[in-house]
Length: 60
Image 1 (cartoon, rainbow, N blue to C red):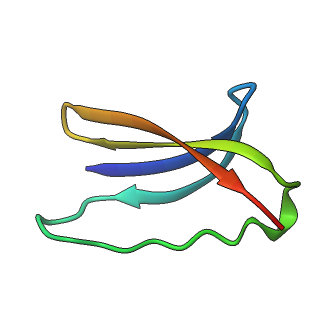
Image 2 (cartoon, rainbow, N blue to C red):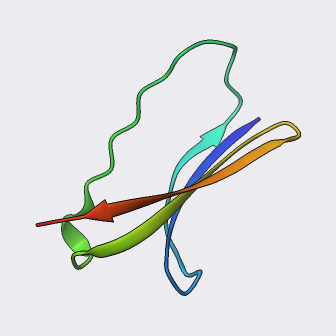
């Protein structure tokens, strides 16, 4: 089971881009950040026991 979540610097969830069972392989996901202001955001990917958080900068 895979979840990909975008959240802001205060930990508030902005959107969940992926929330489903997925087989092994490579996937590409796009996020339309037009509804949120420029700033620093984080995304967390979780798959089974794996979890990783990365920082990203949204510039408009």
